[in-house]
Image (cartoon, rainbow, N blue to C red; front, side, top):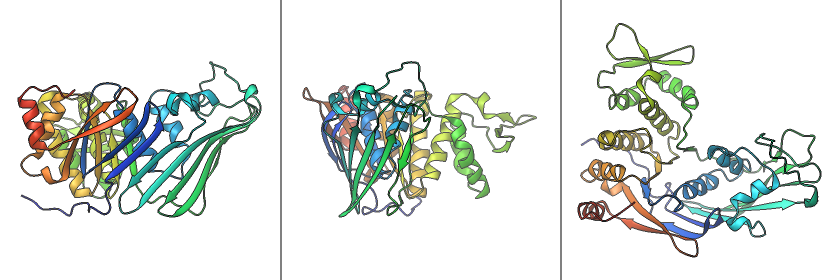
Length: 355
C-alpha cells in the first residue's frame, strides 16, 4: 500500500459548535477526521452543517451568507431575506459558530438595521445585492482567532445603490483554503482549476476519475474553454457529451486539488452517479484527498453512498474516516451519532435504517 503524508491532527478541524443558525438551535459535533461523512433524513440539518463550516472557514468575508443563499437558489438580500439565516427568523440574537483545530475560530453574525419601517419588499428585485429604499441594514461579523478579535461588515445603504459596501478588517488575512460544492455544482467554475492541473502535469487525477465513467479515457485537453476528452475515437469528444457524472467527477477532483492543505465541503455526493460506481468514486476521492492534504466534509442521504465509503475505506483508510448520523430533536438541537466503519457495516447488514 502506498504511504502518503497525511493531514495532521493539529491542522485538521476536529470540532464545531453551532448556535441559532437556520433551523439549528444548537449543535456540538466533535471527532472529525480527514474524511467525514454525514448522513440522515432530508431536512435534518446536513446542508446547514456544511454551511456553518463554510462560514467559519471565511471569517472575514461578510458576503458568505449571501453566497450560501445563492447556492441554495435564493438570490435576494433584502432585510427580511437576511433574517432567513437566523433561527426562527429571530435576528435579535446572533448566529454563533465555533470551530477548532490548532487554533480556535469564533464567529458571531449579527443583523443590524436602521429605519426599519422604510425597508423595500419589492418581490420583483432579483439582484443578489438588492437594497432598501431608505436607511441602512447589514451583517456584522465579530470573530476571534484564539484571543485576537476582528470585525467586518456588509452594509446596504440606499435603494440608489446596486452594490453593498463590504468593510473588511485589514488586520486579518484568511489563510484557510475552503470550497463549498452544492448539489447544483457549476462545471464552468472548474475550468481554471483544470488548467492549473494541466500546467502542473497532474492530469492523472482527472483521468483516473473519468475512467469510472468511461474506461477508455486516455487524456484531455482544453480548446476555447472547452474540455475535450480522448476516449480512443477518431476525435476527442466534449466532456459534456459524457453526461453529468463525468462533469461532476471532474468538479470534485479539481476542487480537492484546489483545496490542497485546506478543506472541501460536498453536499449530496451521490447526485449524478450510478450506485455501482460509488465504491470506486470514494477510492479515487480519498486517494486525492490524502495526496493533496485536503480535509473532506461530505453529506448524503443515500445508503449506496454509505456502503461505498464503507467498502472503500474499511481495509486501508479506516483510521482517517469518520461517519456521523444526524438527527434533529423536537427542540431543534442537532445531534450527531458517530459510527465506526465496523459498526456501520453491521448496521447496514442488519438492515437498520440509516437514512
